[in-house]
Image (cartoon, rainbow, N blue to C red; front, side):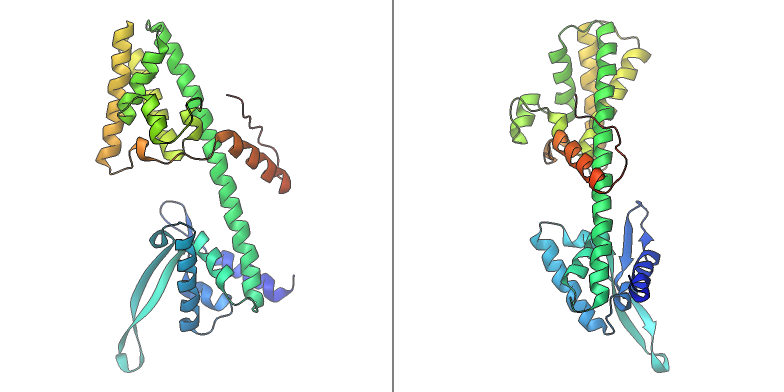
Length: 276
């Protein structure tokens, strides 16, 4: 790669900022000259095309593109509004894809943001795989504690937790999420849903041990109460209720795709398994 295009890559990397939630973002005014655009109006047109592409792809435009402006002092002290836009990595990728393809800077940016976006996808896959495994282990520990408390009818015990957290039984949850009867609910759960279930399991397990609860009925009641409290917490902070969260791609497919991508990128195998 020649030095000018190498400079584009270094500039895009150096202009990257980090939001409080840890997500990378860029400012449109910062990357405009790096992508070879001297005129803001022309670059603004690319941003608008990218917003349309974002909407067409089914993503929320106002999440990936946040319009802003600040007042600057022009000649003779005049105050002028200066438009700008906060851009996520995906927004930058769309801008690169919708930019002037005759510009060498745009082609370089396409490669850069495609690689960045793919890396984030791999990280998200790894997080979901790890979280699913943590939930599996938490449920196993809970089952052992419940058994020691006297639980024999584990279907009833498990259903009590689901009813408390989701406001309905497992069969109804699967119907609402359009899952097959034989599918594992948690294998189709995303990050937020898995996290809620992990909290339900760990807190129930600790309650059973801490309060030395004995008897099947008491253990089932405790599971439901804890799950209802987790549900109430989600409701209080304005979160999406777990039954309303969409089903994600089956975890086995995610694991297979993650392993394949790691091999293609010549990264070390993380030792992930699709076994339950």
